[in-house]
Image (cartoon, rainbow, N blue to C red):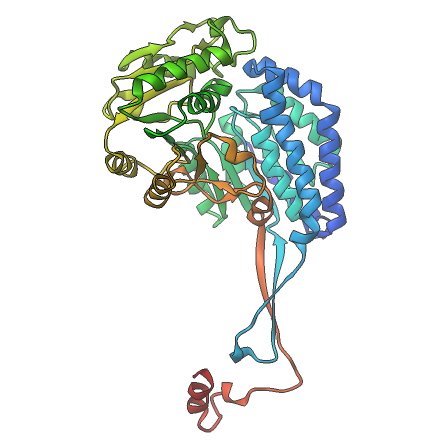
Length: 456
């Protein structure tokens, strides 16, 4: 049985030295990470092309650029985030001062997925470094070229007992989960998330789980249809739909359904051309198993457009399906591919009830000009995060914590939320020695009466 105890022992020893807790050390580490990424930018772009056929534009926009911006944002604000916070104390604590100190957990394990193999490995690592942790990063074996490039960046930027990359398959992940870490950050599917949480429970290790689910997109009758169609097509079909926050299905008002579908088809053609399978920059499905699973959904409902496949290239056209019900297989699990089922509604409260009866989604998107409709949906539907009159874009703001709720995950990151995720808030009360409040002690005569009077 493979063991990585040697690595966790070395990292635990290095963490105990206190080096990573120094703010200057963390800032230098983030700068080294940024420089390492910039030096291998072309290598990363080529790796993402080889693994997923990502275009240079998409590779930079959705992977490299967003990570570099996250590092810059963290460097700008880290000194402020790391400062002890003085908090108020109640009158019962007269003479005392309260402080909250952010301290690193220690050893962090980051398990990254394959759909955005660089961004979803590097982004949580930024938070782990900023908070002062050591880290072990396990990238996905399904994107081997990107994983190897990540390993090169880390190898040449950091010592192994500080930040390390371990490559391998399921057995490697299982072996790492057997070790005792102080924090685990996992991005992936709901079933695997449950396995990670069970493994973490054996050591009482806190976790962040960034999972997924069927994220709904509501298009109300007053929506700007042309703009909605373009933004939905962009959010759904980039990375061939292999995005955890992609719209998984659409609920469109029945009065505008046909017009919206025409606009959606035009938007897809505008983004990917008349024949997307021949577009050299159209992302492919990661592997045969995933391709076969998605292809089986093409028999559900009625195809409005799309549906073409290329088994050799592992590509599936952007496809829209109608005449879909909740009992159809395509509605039973997260699609994670370029298929978009469209359901219709006439009564918004009915659609809200239907969405609310499903597991809580990672994201929700609503297209409407009505402030009352916006507030109604926001208040009545629980979801991780989302957009009004846009899709996916919320995850790119470092000021908005990103995470799920319920079965779509727990915990959040990005910006200060990343620093907070990998930090323990240590509360300290500094008490005065200039005087003492005698009624706190049990031998004080009439002590209880004085306490009650004091509290009133």
